[in-house]
Length: 88
Length: 272
Image (cartoon, rainbow over all chains, first blue to last red; front, side, top):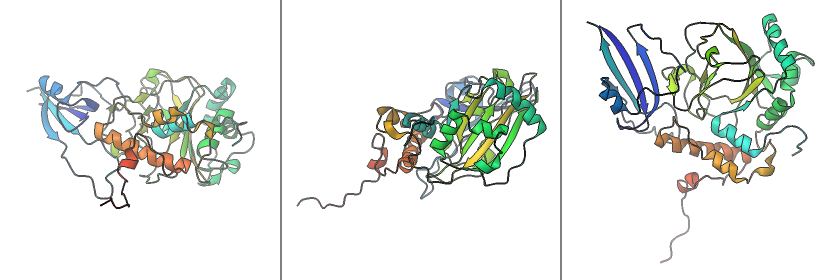
């Protein structure tokens, strides 16, 4: 059993909002995803990934802005981790 | 402001503030591009941190001739001003078929300045094709407060730039831009020479400001990028306004009322 991981960054905290960023990690070793390897997102929304068999296992919490830093921007906020299991 | 040098105009500086970089395609002449690889192979002399640009590179040296090319000198004059100091310089090399990319990162340390910034030059002496691992850039990422490679989890962002360029191209970068050397899947060694420059004067109206009121400046500063989340994208515009206010010494400047609306605290009592 090997795990494949898909990380999607969405436009807002809703799982059916558009994908704005993505990353893939492949425990099967069949592919070697890396930084800057494509311009086309694998799915248009988070729900589209569910429909293709990816299982959601983590979603970013909604955390209020830190007092005094309400206008600062930093990491992408709406991060969703999915996986697929491969093999016996 | 004299315009005999190739100073940037306000639209170009607004583009720098919005995108976090400017792209100067093919501004280095072919004979210098041909010379560059030998210069890199021989090794560049070390420059102590903070050396004035005019003292860092001897007259006639490759690096000196590079920064004195009119388009590059004009961009530097417009963004960091006269006599910046050299922070450091380095030749970055991506080996053929090396297997992986650099993690997405911003250089140096998390940087809190809104009223000052460093500029980095990235010079590409070769034609960079799609498979040569040209630098990945994330437009509009430079004002995000993240520390170095903490962004390494992000592999691809919508609207990213995977640099493909002709020989002699120079990128002029804000210090905070998210970037990384991409995986080189070609059989060619790919070089990039980077110089980081620190300003020594206030970075206020250093460019050709004749077009400061041009509507194109507002249009540029309100630009969204495809990877921005809806909510954070609004904050990005707000933060650009803060930068533009500092660069123009205009504390009232605004775009679409974003900054004015949330700072309004009326002081006059209402009529009874």
